[in-house]
Structure formats: structure tokens, C-alpha cells
Length: 165
Ligand code: SF4
Image 1 (cartoon, rainbow, N blue to C red):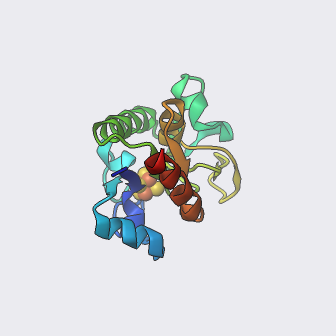
Image 2 (cartoon, rainbow, N blue to C red; image 1 turned 90 degrees about the vertical axis):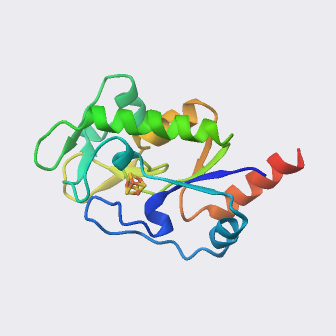
């Protein structure tokens, strides 16, 4: 059975920067949970950041790939540089994904770690722009398909393709 890495906050775990969850009510996700298919994971917590923590954004609105390349930092709203924690979390996510043979991930949209279509623009003004988070960038670099919580059906299609070979 193909396993699926999933953002822990989508599974109801209170791991977000504000100490809350972003629980998904998606029926397919619930089915996968019952099947024991899901591997919940929070890159920021696994990277060593506390709950709660200041919001963080990638500076200049650069994407996660720029952070991986050392060309952009991740900064918290209090001005602290949290780049290393984000990189550690991404590496831990990749190691976990590999240990479960994961090919598909469902990650929370908009996050500087987990975003796969949009991220915030680095100004802390609540403005989104196209881009991907640090963990998403690393997973995609290693061939793992990342979908957000609004595209779980697409992830299901990919899973079926993988399982039916
Ligand atoms: Fe959720 Fe990802 Fe943020 Fe953790 S890092 S709280 S899993 S969006």
C-alpha cells in the first residue's frame, strides 16, 4: 500500500505557529486515515521550532528552492532567522517520506514549509504569491508529488496510477 505524507495540522494536530490546527474534513483523507495510509508530519516542529512560534515567511517572496540553494532566508515576524530550522525540518520530512516509501504528499497550502502553489510574499502583510515552501521544494526535488488540501482528489488519481502500475 502506498503511504501518504500529510501535514500534521491537516490531521487536527495543534502544531501551527498560532497553536491551532487546520483540520481537513476531506472524505478521501478520512478514508486513507482509516486504511492506515497516512504519515502525519510537521516540518517546523520536527525542525525544532516551538508551539506557538512567531509567523515566518521566506524573505523577498523567494521560493523554497532559493532557500535550499542558500539564496534566501526564512525570517520570523520578530526578525529572527529561522532558516536552519526550516532546512532541518525539510530534511527530516524527506527522511521520513523515504522511510515509508512515500511518493505522494498532501501539504498545507500557503505555508513557508508546506505550500505547493502559494506562499506569503515576505512582507508579513498577508499577501500571497505563487511559490512553494522549503519542505515542498525538497520533496519535489526528490520526485515526491506534493498536492495541497484542495487537490486531494488529484493525489488520489496519482496514488491509483502508482498502485495499479
Ligand atoms: Fe502545518 Fe506544515 Fe505549518 Fe507544520 S509546517 S503547521 S504541518 S503547514
